[in-house]
Picture 1 (cartoon, rainbow, N blue to C red):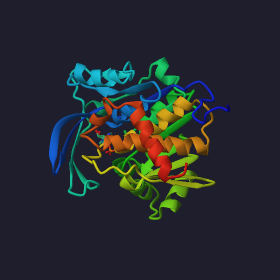
Picture 2 (cartoon, protein in one colour):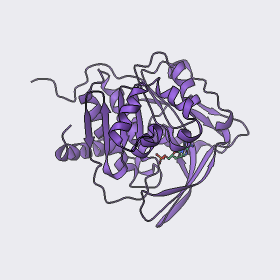
Picture 3 (tube, rainbow, N blue to C red):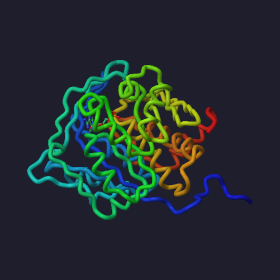
Picture 4 (tube, rainbow, N blue to C red):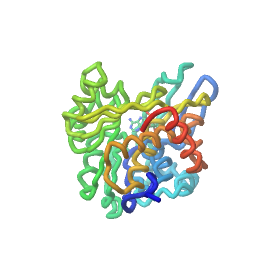
Length: 313
Ligand code: AMP
């Protein structure tokens, strides 16, 4: 019998994520929560740790305690590089969703411990072969990128805020990564180009070899210099709220890539997008990342198999 296509070609790669670690307050027309564990690095790592051991880097304040660590540790996330700032308060974000749950308003963003954050990675985090620069100020993303000299595949996210107020720094950081993961509106804003394909090509000209456009409930698209791949979202009707869906998508994607260990070619990236898509579909089925806390790998695999039946990858 030949090797299964799930067979690993090489040992798994080590994975580090830097990004926000947050408390989020979320309002929807059907309910609200005033203190959810959130932040780009948290949503990411709760998904990526399904596939590969993940080290999380970012600062927290005195309000971040055992309950929060317990959630991360239950998934095997390594928190040695979570920096506790004595006297500080954890990053806080509040948002309100509309009846159309794809529409939201940001009500509050308190950077708190992020204001003076200087990333200092331990040797283990620095040695990561796969690195994800989650959504934070782009200069901080770049400082982490520069510390991780062993990285073989680096991807990053960002958001409209940094496109607006730190455009130059963002463009510099994009020049240092292999893969840019943004939602379609952000890509268009970054490049000042309303057509997604042209926007993605302009983003490729900044340096990355892969651009992945997240399109919310419509799925995602991968654009490289030689091709295009589009993947539908997993068709769930059980939507609660989508905070962190993009980070969860990135976590499934990068976790899968790290677990494969082998060359990161187009076929592997397409399958990785399916894993990201499946993880994100669970994320939207609860407040924050709650649905991921006790999620089993078999549940993710089942959704990837369903996706495979409706899309080719
Ligand atoms: P998303 O729904 O993909 O935009 O991700 C929402 C998550 O990003 C929340 O958990 C927030 O804590 C976090 N977040 C929101 N604004 C920022 C920001 N300016 N910098 C870093 N993280 C943020």
